[in-house]
Amino acid sequence: MGRYILRRLLISIPLLVVISFLTFILINLSPHDPAELVLQAQEVPVITEELLSQTREELGLDQPFIVQYIEWAASCLQLDFGDSYVTGQPVWSILGPAFLNTLKLTLVSVAVIILLSIALGVICALQEGKLVDKSVRGFSFFLTSMPSYWLAALMIWYFSVKLDLLPTSGMNSLASYVLPVIVIAISYAGIYFRFVRSAIISNLNEDYVLYGRACGLPEKKITGKILKNSLQVAVSVFCMAVPIILGSTVVVENVFAWPGLGSLSIKSILSRDFPMIQAYVLVLAVAFVLFNTLSDIINAVINPKLRKDL
Amino acid sequence: MNILDVKNLKIWDGSTGRTIVPDSSFKLKQGSCLAIVGESGSGKSVTCRSIMRLNKGSIRQSGDILFQGENLSLLSEKEMRRKRGKNLCMILQNGMRAFDPSSKLGVHLKETLDQHFNWSKQAFTDHMAKAMESVKLSNPVELLNKYPHELSGGMLQRVMIALAIALEPDIIIADEPTTALDTISQFEVVEQFIRLREVMGCSMIFISHDLGVVRKIADDVLVMKDGEIVERGTTQAIFTEAQHEYTRYLVSSKLALSQHFENVMGGMALADR
Image (cartoon, rainbow over all chains, first blue to last red):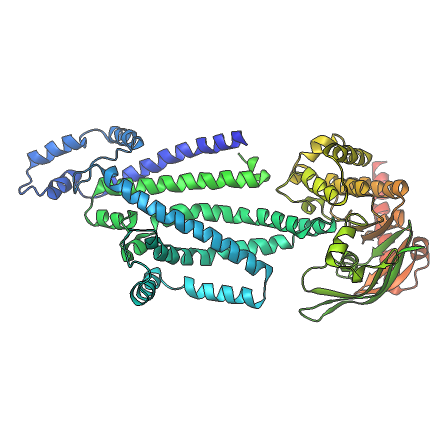
C-alpha cells in the first residue's frame, strides 16, 4: 500500500511540470506586451521605446523563453508568483487570502454535499421506486435546474430580507456561510446523490449480498459491505468536487460578495493582470492534480483490485 | 424420514402480480441428494431461494416449508437468520461474485463462523484450514489473506464448499455450482460435492441443467418447466424411463450431444490412423 501511494505521488510530479509549462505558454501567447501593460497600469504618461526595453529587462522578459520558465517555476515553488501588474504587490499576498476564503467555503460545501448525497442516496436506494424515492428525485431535478444566481437571489430575498435571519453578503461570521453553502450544495448534491443511489441499487443485486444473507450475516454487516462497495464510485466524484467548486464559485462569490478566488479572478482577467491570472490558473491546476491523486489513493485503500494497476 | 417437506409453495412477483411458481410440493429425504433440473427461467433458483426465504424485494411466497418438522414460513426474520448458514447452507453459481470484492476471504469466513459458533481465533483458523485442505486447497492460511479476485472461480467454489464443511449444515443448497466453471474445474468441484456427501452425510438440493453432473451426484430428480414440476423420480428412472415429453427431450438432447462428441472424437481417431 505504501508503495502504491509513493508511486502515485511520483507520477503526479511530471504532470505538475507539464501543467505549469502549459500555463506559462498560454499566458505568453497573449498578444499583449507585458511591459506595456505594466507601464499602463502604473499610469506612465508617455511610453517610450527606451522605457519599454528597460521594463522588459526588469521583468526578465529579455531572457530566453526556457530560462524565463525555469526562473518562474522555481519561484512559484516558494509561492513567489511575481508582483501584480496592477497594484505592484506580491501576487501571493493578494491571491493567498482569497484562496483561503474560497477553500473554506469549498470545504464546508463539500462536507455538506457528501453528507446530503450519501443520506439521500441511501434513502432513495432503499425505497427504490416508492413515493419517497420518486419525490426526492423529482424535487432535486427541479432545484438543480435552477441557475445558482437565481437561487441565490431567492435565498437572499427570503432569508435575509424578508425573515432577516442571515446576512445578505460578506464573510463576517459563521452565519455568512449558510446561504452560499446551501446554494452550492443544492446544485451539486442534487446530481451526486444519484451516483450513490444507482451504485447502491446495483450492489444490492450483487451475489455477495445474497451469499452474505445465505450465510446468516446480520443485515447491519451486509449494509456496511454494500456501502463500502458503493461509495467507491462516489469517492472520485466527491474528491473532484473540491477543485471543481474551487474553480467555479465565481457566480456565488459575486452574488454574496465573498472575498475569494472567484471575485479576484474576474477582476484580474478584466485588468489583464497576467501574473495574477497565471498564479490563479496554476493553483487550480495543482488542486485538480492533488485531489485526483487523493481520490486514487482513497480508492486503492478501499478497492484492492486497483492497487495492482500501478 | 424427510428432512425437508415443501407443501403448496407458491411464488409470485408482488409488483406485477405475475406468478412464477404456481403450486409446488416436494420432499427431501434425510441424507439424500435431490436434483432440480430445467432450463433457465423455469423457477429452479427462485424455488431454492424461497426455502431460505431469500428472494428479492418484490417477490412474495406462500405455502409451508417444513424443516425437521418446523415450519420455516412462520419463523421471524431473526429466527430464520439463525437457520441460514448453520442449518441451511447455500452454495452459489459464481464464486467470483459471491464474496465481498473489497474484503479478504478470511473476513467473510470469520464473520460467518462467528455468527454461528463461539470459536477463538485459533479455533477458527484450525477448523477452516482443515476444511480447506479437505477440498484440496493448499496453503489455507495464505488463502484466507487473499482477496477474491486473486483466486480462480473453481478455487472460490471450493472455498464455499469448505465453508459449508466448517458450518456442518443439515441441508446444502447448491445453485448451479458448476455452470460458471471450465470442464476441468467442473470435474474437481463435482468430485468435492460427492465427497462432501460421503463424509458429512448431509442432505443436498442440487440445481443444475447439466444432466451429466446430475446423473453422477443425485439420488432423485425433479424436472421443472415454466414454474411447474413436470416429472419426478429416481435418477435411474428419469434417465431410462422418463414419462414426460419434456424430460425425454432433455435426456435425448443430452445423449445426442455426447453421441456427437463421441463421433467427432472417433472421427479424429480415424484420421490419426
